[in-house]
Every structure is written in structure tokens, then in C-alpha cells.
Amino acid sequence: MKPWVTLARRKVLDHAPYLTVEMHTVRLPDGRVIPDWPWVITPDFVTIVAETVEGRFLCFRQTKYALKRPSLAMVGGFIEPGEPPRTAARRELLEETGHTAATWTSLGRYVVDGNRGAGTAYFFLAREARLRRPPTGGDLEEQELLFLTRKEMQQALEKNKFRSLTWASIVALALNRLGR
Image 1: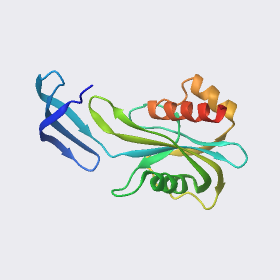
Image 2: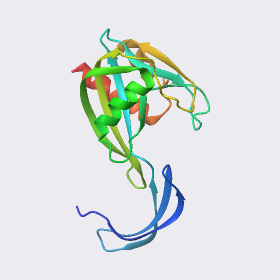
Image 3: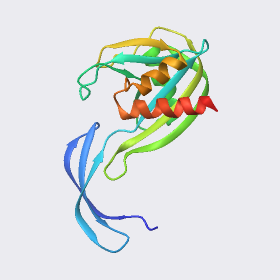
Image 4: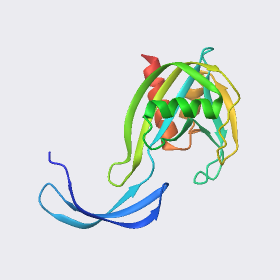
């Protein structure tokens, strides 16, 4: 299969670094041209499922603007310009929870929206996590750090307690990987 080809692009909204919207002119594999294809640019980010040396999983109970009510959430954040994703994941785990982890496994790289872009998510499983210092996160939302068992993580996933698709996806991927 042939890919779509971007023929031209113009910026229609610029709230960098958090959001830019472009209109692209694209040519489809069959030769048709679409003159106004919206393209969303947001920062790439990391999300981490971290398991402690005691076998507990670090997650937060928090709110996010779009969710309207509390949710379970995983550790994560934006990748800084020029920062490798694994380095960003280590930094976010330490900043948000005060933990470091001995073993890191990539769970994949995923485009957020296959048609509109919206950034790329890099998922990681961090194991053998240990508390090294107090968290220094400073995120906008209030967060309560929780330590859940594998069974509690599975039940939370099944009961839609991870109210963001990003969090539900990485938890499912991590539990699947650990189940092997």
C-alpha cells in the first residue's frame, strides 16, 4: 500500500508548545487530492507502568480537565525537546513519584490519532522500582499516589477506573506482558 503524500501545509492555530493545528493538502494513493486535511501537533509524551520491588504498582488518583471526575492515572509527561523517550520516562518517574527503577521495557510507540496526528505516546514498563527521594512533580492537578496489587490493577481496568484511553491501554499492555 502506498502512503498518503503531504503536498502543502499551513498553520491555522499556534499555541506552541502545547498545540498547533495545520491544514494539509494531501494526495491519496489513488491520486485524489484533499485540500484541507486538519493536522494536530501536540508534544510527544511518555507513560509508565511502574512496579515496585514489593510487587505493587504505582498509580495516581487524580482529576484531569477533560475527565470531569477523579480517575486512576499512570505516571507520565511530555518529552523535552531532544530528550530520548526512555530518558523522559526515567525523569518523569523520579519527578512524580520519587522512584527509580532497575529494569525498563518498552511497550511500544503509538501515534495518538491515526488520521490527525496529535503526538506520539511512548509506553514503558518499569520494574523493581524503589523510593529514592520525595516527589518533585509540581503538576497542575492534585494527585494521590497509590500502591496497587496486580489484582487491583486488573479490577480497576475492568471497571473503567482508568478513564483515559492512554492509561487503560498501557495498563492492559503491561498486564498482558507480565502475564506471559
